[in-house]
Image (cartoon, rainbow, N blue to C red; front, side, top):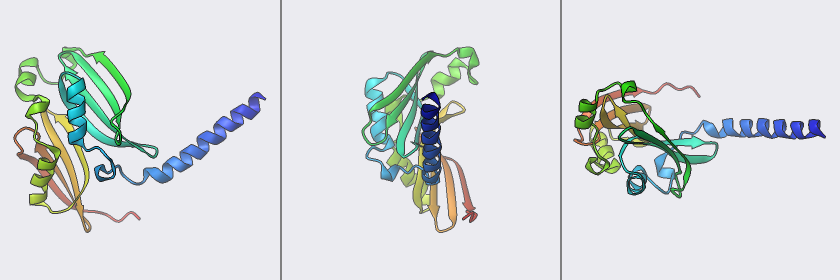
Length: 184
């Protein structure tokens, strides 16, 4: 009886892994979700005090989720939200030691913006599209060296462009345009 249950569990896991690998090859794309990063930013800001320091669309099996990190003083809250409904699937809060941060408190206060100060995802992608007119593959809100930035990836034909855009000023901090390699 125990071996039968174990066999069913292992068989289910193998089947899910094979199915998951087949689905995993397609990257998470914001245009296939009902909620975009602007919607998620607003929802999180209304429910969680602090500054969004990271916001990323990710894929878990066949489900798309937004992973969000919110900092409020010395508390860091990690959230996982359903990309279609906004439902909080996972929430974890922890006290972080200020000594563990790469930047000091004065610099953090001056550079990390409040969510209300951020430009929209659409405005950031419009800025990137002025430099490289491609299809948006990925947009991520992240903190980089104490600065909140949109990391945007665009593709067109066999070219790919990666941008880091300041989420407060809209300035392009980094732009990298490459020709994609065909791995298929």
